[in-house]
Amino acid sequence: MDEEDDWDEEEEVLDNATHCPSCDEMTAHDILREKKVGNGADFKVRCLTCHHVHTVEFRPPPPTNIPFILTDGPDSQRVVLVVDADEEFVVGDVFEEAEMLWRIHQIETKSGLMTKGESAKNIARVTALRTDMVRVKLTLTRGEDSTADVLVVPQETKFTGSHLMEHKGETWRIRAIHTGTGRTMRGTVDAPDIKRMYLHEPPNPEHFTPRTPRERRQAWKEGRLGHNPNPERPKEHIKKGVNPNPPRNRSRKKKRD
Picture 1 (cartoon, rainbow, N blue to C red):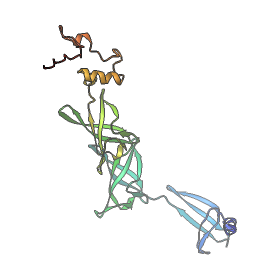
Picture 2: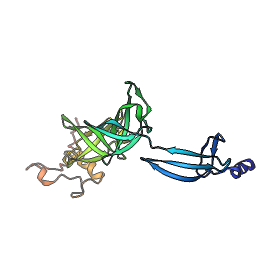
Picture 3: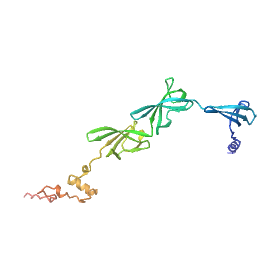
Picture 4: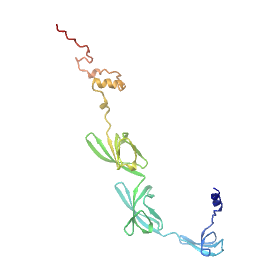
């Protein structure tokens, strides 16, 4: 701990640090004069160590044009962005353009090679995918019919298997979520990780209506007969002339002599 404290105490901050040709190292300098040259400037400085006076030129890197292919789902557009020639681009970096976020997907150099990172002056083309909104492919099944659709949601959206969701004014149940590496029927998955989501139309409430005395008794036990809380069948379901609750006493057979 003492050595670290000594190191912190010895750390020195240099004002206007730049390379001194006389000392041949980075030293602090006084700025004697500044002269603007184009978009840059020339500084006449004096080394505080050896008092050598020299000129330091600061020039911004020249701008360069890079074609970007911006892909948003099935739609792609080509735009040309002006950047500094020494700016570095790396696959996976996120940048903003047209009030949207894009993630660099591919970088092609002027020699025709694909690379994971390169400076702007050597880049021929950059491909980027929109990242602030995610397109989730859907398969919607209604009975025997299935249709395909796409849902566009914010990147941070999550979906959980077996849950209900609204889509175009209708309620659907998430039957399964396919991630490319597997499928889950009850797990929660981030929207960017979803390859396809399978939705089924929820059963009609009439599907759960008990139809037989046995089903009604079970529904009564489970408390699902709120408007008619008993196992008896409603009168409108009983045919005329039929006793809904026939006696259960069986006639006994006569013994043989």
